[in-house]
Image (tube, rainbow, N blue to C red; front, side, top):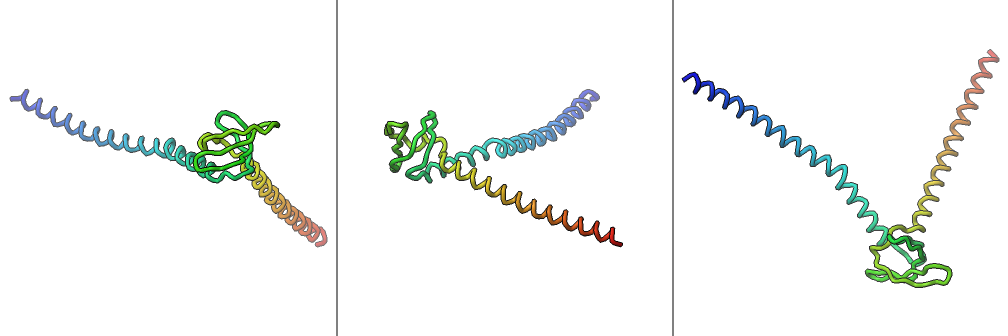
Length: 146
């Protein structure tokens, strides 16, 4: 009888611990899946969307770099492919749109815009600092006069 009671109480204790452990295991798995989504899947989808937008916004005259490293200028744009001119002898190549890795023209324009914005911010900041310096100089002069 005592043995039976000991077995029953040990089974109840283990089932209670197992139940709590399974809940924590499920919560841990959900948290891990959430972290994986925000660390891996979401950024990858964002990059794919940006690449797709870049490929769909190609224009004639843009300088591009392919995934194979070929540099050329876009001459013709069609539904699924493009024709580029490469080299000094103007060889023409037909490529699939998915083979475009970088649009150098847009990248350079973006860099110029960012640089112009930085310069504008620096000039505004410089003007504010000059104003602060002149204000503090005026205050110092007033203190000296008093």
